[in-house]
Length: 512
Ligand SMILES: [Zn+2]
Image 1 (cartoon, rainbow, N blue to C red):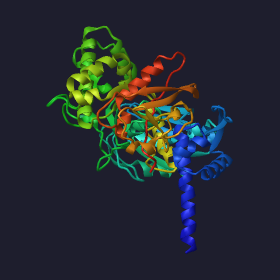
Image 2 (cartoon, rainbow, N blue to C red; image 1 turned 180 degrees about the vertical axis):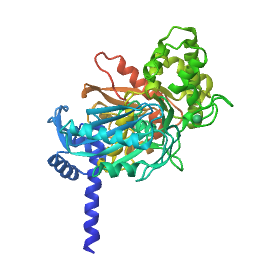
Image 3 (cartoon, rainbow, N blue to C red; image 1 turned 90 degrees about the vertical axis):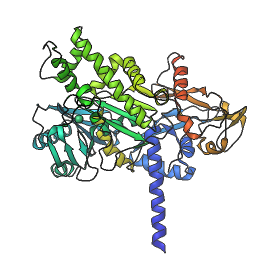
Image 4 (spheres, rainbow, N blue to C red; image 1 turned 135 degrees about the vertical axis):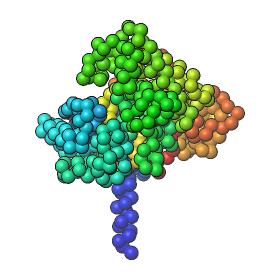
C-alpha cells in the first residue's frame, strides 16, 4: 500500500509544479501571493515549488511590486535564458531557422531560398539540418530543448508527422521521423505552418486570450488555424483549417491543389501576381522575389494594378466572411507575409468587404485585426511545439485572463463581490485576487472589470475599469470575453497618456 501513496504525492508535486510554471510563463511576473488564487495552491506548496524552480534556474526574480502599506512583494518570472529552442519555417520560397529563448526572443537565425520546383524532401531536409547546425554553431546558448517545424500542407498529428503537401509534390512523407534521425538527440516536432503561426499569435500576439478565433494565414498559399473553445481544432485527420481551398468561384481559376475557384487562387500572393499578369499588367515586377513583387503591385498607381488589388481585397473579405459565418469567432487575425502587407494598407476595406459578405450578427460580434508577430511568426510558432512540452502539458494555452494586468472584480448593483468575500471595500484594494470562483453563482447584471495598465513590462499601481452595459439577464462567464469589454478597456487605455498596450483581462475558467 506504500507505493501508490508515494506515487500520488509525487504526481501531486509534479502537477503543482506544472501549474505554477504555466501560470508564471503566461502571466508572469507575479508575486508568490498572486500565485495562490491564480493556481489554487496553498502557500506552502507555492513556497516549496518556487524554491525548487528558482534553485534549478527555471525561475528568476524580476523586481519588486510595491503594495499598499505592506512590504514590497518579490516578482517571479520564468527565466527566458534558462533554455533555448529551435523554430523552423518551411515556406514556399524559403526555409527559415531561428534559435530562440523560452520567451521567443531571437538569438540566431539562418535562411535558405527555395527555388520554384525544388521542394523535394531531400532538399528541404538538407536546408533544415544545415540551418539547425548553423544556429547552434553560431551561439553558445544551451541547453537546447528541441526543434519545432512548421510545414505547408497537411501534417498528420503523431511522432512520424506524415506530411501531405500537394504544392510541394509531397505525398505521405514521414518528415518527423526523417528529421529525428538526422537531428538526434534533439527531439523534433512538426505541425502545419498555419497551426504553428496560430499558436504563436495565441500565446504572444493578437490572439492572446481568445477562446474562439481564427488565425488566417495569407502568404504564397492560404491557410488558417481555427481555435474552438480555447483549443486548436484539427478535425478528424488533421486537415481542418484548409481555408485556402474553399471555393469562392465555381469553375473559377485553376488552383495549385487541382481544383477550380479556390480562395488561394485569388488572394494567395502567387494567385494575385498571376491575375495581374493575366489582366495585361506591365511586367515590371521582379521575377524571382514574390515578396517584393507583391509589394510593388500593392503600391503601384497603374489602373490594372489598382483593379487587381481592389478585387483581391474583395475576395479576401469574402473569404473572411465565410469564416465568420461558419465559426462565429470573437476574433480573426489576418497574418502571413502577404496578409500583413494587405492588412497594413487596406485593413478598413478588408473589414468592410467581410461585412458586406457575412451575416450581421457574427460580423458585429467579431473583431478583425492584423497579426502582431510579423511575417516570421511561423518559425516562432514552431518553437512553441517544443516549449509546450517543456512546460509540461500538450494542450497549453494562456488562460482567459490576459496579460499581466490581473485584478478582477465583479459588481452586482452597488454590491461588490470579490472571490470569497462580499466586502464592498475590495474594489479600492489593489490586491490581485481572482474572482473566478465567485462567477457562476454571482448572477450579476452589471460587470466591472478592473485592471492595471502595463508600461514597459511594469504594472502600474493605478487600476482602470470598464463597466458593462446593464442587462436584464445575469452575465454568464462567457460574457466576459464580449467585444464591449475589449473595446471599452482599449478606449480607456488610449486616453491615458504615456500608457499603452494595456490588455483587457477577464474572468477565466479555473485551471483543470
Ligand atoms: Zn485549391
